[in-house]
Amino acid sequence: MIRPCDWGLERYREALAKGPIDGEIPECLLELGLLRPLAETPTLWAAIPPDIATSELVRPMERAVLVQQHTIAAIQEAVSHAEDVYREEHRESATPLRLLHGADVIRAALLQARDDCVSEMLTAQPGGSRDPEALARTLPQEVAMSRRGVKQRTLYQHTVRAHGPTLAYIEQVTSQGAEVRTLNELFDRLIVFDRRLALIPDPRHDLSTTALLIEHPAVVQYLVKVFDHAWARAEPVSMTAEQVRPRLMTDETRRTVLRLMIEGHTDAVIGTRIGISTRTVSTHIKKASELLGGRSRAHLAYLLAQSEILEDGPARPAKTS
Image (tube, rainbow, N blue to C red; front, side, top):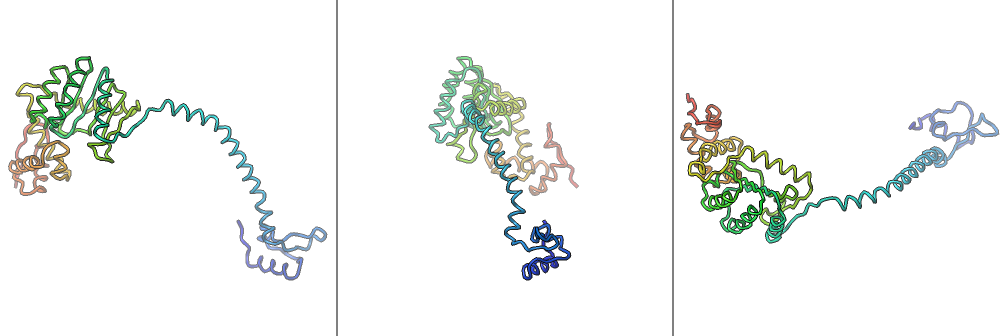
């Protein structure tokens, strides 16, 4: 929008002081409607009060805005009927995501889900060895599920292979047809029933007393894919002596510890991620330093880059100068 120029302001002041003026009129005054020719004498120009000039300028715009507002209101009114139908249908068909608070509430939800399960239960249990009391509490339920034909697959971390109570539990459930595999690193806790209902922890709260119960088909199927991907990479647990504690409990675990160390994680974080104690993490790092001649963690990281210890197969000492 044009603004009044200095000459225009002078001519406008002149018209206000002396009355209608003649002669050349600045373009800025014409565009803003501040001067208007007299009807009876078109060669004379009279000053128009600014509020009147403004009103006449904006009136067409206001009319256009009003038309748009009426159009918007008409569209909203027309769509509102469909919106009511949409909300009603969405409310009836949407599957919920519920936050469960309290260990007792979670336990009750698990019991109900186990009772309702008819074909398959998938479980991921990170954190290494499990609480013997929790194992004793769930064993009868899972044996009963197997006997009524529910297929069970469970993922643990490798460190359960060194935990007697967990191994005894695994021996009993596998004898009933359940399958158990282990990995060094495992994603978070997960239980899926019949690929229709899943429970996962809520990281915003205390993981031991909160859980999310998910029944949305797309989310549940996504979680099943995550589980299946990990399952394909995991090592089956056999109860023969040579298979319960294979090479992966030494070489593979140590490689994982060293890889996480190189990434900058502390011993405590490494232990949490692969389900072993901080002392065991330190022992793995110490033994690797002794093998390679590392004088510090930084020096060990350098030597690891020169060796094959983070690759599959036996490690060889690094070349030192």
